[in-house]
Image 1 (cartoon, rainbow, N blue to C red):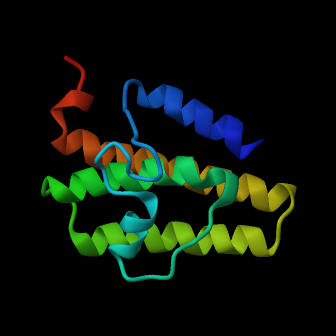
Image 2: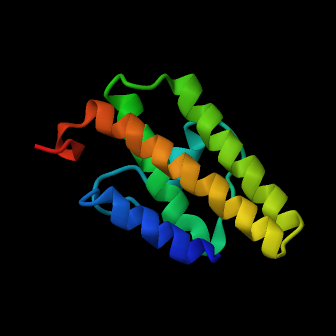
Image 3: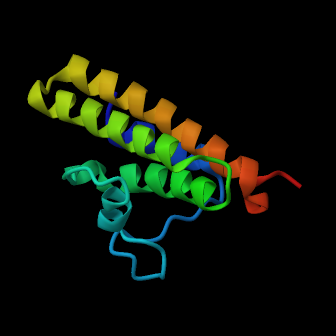
Length: 124
């Protein structure tokens, strides 16, 4: 299972959720700014950067709207960074599959947090 195809599936499930660009050019925080919020070393997610940014951004929206504590946001980012580093340290089909499954679960969690506080994500 490729992470790209898995993430595309998650994006389709997310419906109309829009994610700004990584550089923050649309007025949203950049990917590096979101990572810096938690005072942890930034991670180069390579080809997965946009997908990871989507999850971080959704969690950030939930945090900004009071649906998630800053501590939980940072724990979320840290868990993803740790799993990504583990995957990159020992790449292979099993590691890639484990990373993809873990990340898709995290993406779904971030969407759930955002949907709880963002009325544009609720069915209506």
